[in-house]
Length: 222
Ligand SMILES: [Zn+2]
Image 1 (tube, rainbow, N blue to C red):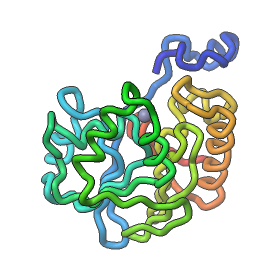
Image 2 (image 1 turned 135 degrees about the horizontal axis):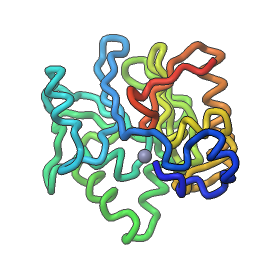
Image 3 (image 1 turned 90 degrees about the vertical axis):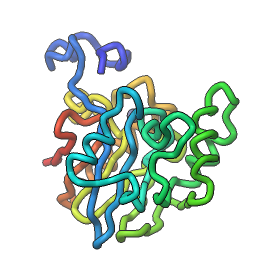
Image 4 (image 1 turned 180 degrees about the horizontal axis):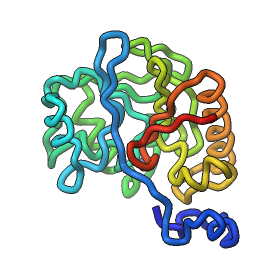
């Protein structure tokens, strides 16, 4: 992630952390076994740059094997892999999204949400809207992580805490959660959620799995 994404962070701090040339990050998705169910968390940016399909194939997972797809939020680098042109990529997948996230995107102007609307329409037969606090298939707990987007969701799956876009530059934001990437839509809420989820992971000894954590995209908070 470019340093310019974190305009609020002072140069002195960025230089002390040796991040002036950018902050290590990935675009990640996670294939998780929880209570005997296999769940895909997010789908990356999709064709042609995305490598989700080759990565799934490498571990023996075909598109039809994806029965559950849980989404942290509806940004393009998380839902891009759901479609290939006008075709859906995961025809067997039951898709889970926070109702708060779905409703917020559906109310945005067309120039902002066209891709989201088209993707949701394509999967409308198998769309499930949940509330924060709900327990989903696989015993997965949906946790309020709003701030980055209005219905941004974290998921507790066994000892894993899928944190979505709770941070975009871990090397800066773990020691300094007060700084937001410009992508965070509600910065005050994003800061609160970032702090709360790091504490939750630490207190419950959960490994964070983050969609923009540096490779391999897992992090334990001590
Ligand atoms: Zn993202």
